[in-house]
Image 1 (cartoon, rainbow over the protein chains, first blue to last red):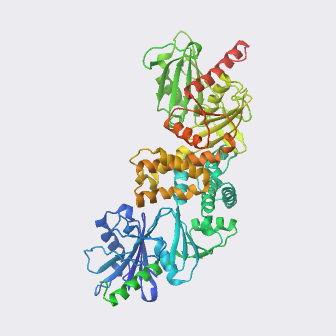
Image 2: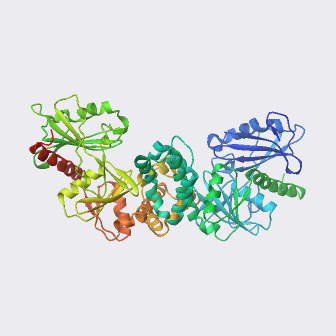
Image 3: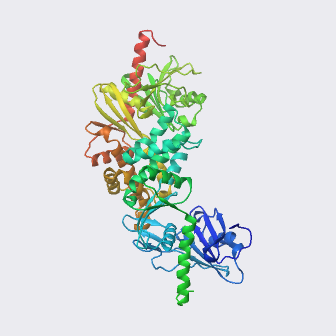
Length: 314
Length: 314
């Protein structure tokens, strides 16, 4: 893998386009990553006409000018306010569920862009755009996988996979709630210094697992404990995180109970989830989000190539 | 009662000084309110030297220049970052718990300012500044009151009162969490139009009471339901409020179970709490926060007058 800026001829290009960031990979033979780039041109900052220039800014050095390079995109680029709206596949179903990819018109004739569909769940209502492609990657690699996948993030997803299908999923705003409370509520006064304390995180997770409804009271308790007992910023932050992650682990019990668990990511946040799951006696297998997203986009690419071979698609 | 701006000779002046607002009342014979004023000069916007000018801005028209007027103050003016720090009385104890009032030095010799102490609870840690004075007002009016008082607000307090003492209390950040989630999280997209729907509020309260831990998942469910089923802004807001208030009612059950309940305030927020309590089969008595705070400050004033009579205080 080399840094972007050097000329690379990608076989194809993989893109995960999130609300606040975009990541792109130049993929070579046998799915090898030749280069990668990350940009802050997230979908929230772009109007539809700005997606192509934002993409080219990142991937121009990877184009072989003698042919058209396919670019496979998942994530919020397919949302209504994104580049081109793609439908949702309704679960239970395989990711993509046989739906065609959406190909937005582009000005540059050196690229052909294919945006993958998202997934929806009718009851209880839920949606995802992006994570379904990581699930497609997992299923492509392990067709017999049967278990639950946890994808920690601003909006953490829990996804139940069985028989090559996404059976159901659930979204938790835990990361976003933590961000708002730790920076914009009365709790920020005692957390701004940052830091982390594992014993306080562990204790708070255990409290939430035992008495989930008491989280409502314990939030202000962090502030009071800082005022009355000098609870440190590190302990306050870890305690807030533990209360919220613990509440999520309590609520997601129907997902993880009695199932194999894959935890995606190596971030500190993913580490916190691993620790919280460990307190419930669970030892999730870890997996890499980049490997999964590229495998998932590659699966869509191979389907498209097969369809082209049958003369079904451009 | 007359509007401020007209000259009034107050017997004494009552002040509730909160973080974002200050309210003051000119009190006449027999505790009658002669005039009132509200200001946005909350404690968060003031340094210690700005409290006296902010107060005089509001109450100058109420001063009888032939004598010194006593001003009794409760709330965050007694916090460390306030006008002058007052101690906390530790529960269980009567409000003020026999502690002296704190009298900050003032430049204007026409006023004498007395700031009341707050209350603290050691286990679980909690603090209040202001609400204890409403409790003192309730106890002054009804010395035999035995029950729980709910004071809805940005930080809602539940206070257990018995035998003239504050036995224990609990603070919930429900109002602040609602504010942050409805205006600054992904949920704001579908709530910005405002509005309210009682059936959706009721349904959400019932869900939280039955399955409190599931609130963690149901927050994003509001967004998904708006995307997939066109849930209205009014229904979305009411649903978010119902989930959070319901979680608070579930967590405060040790407070209200089997006790008489007084609900303070006539705001829409207090109405939402009344409705949520009603869904648990509870019919709280309603009470007026202005009546209570003036009665509580008046109790402190009478104690001070009695002490002056005994020659104990200035």
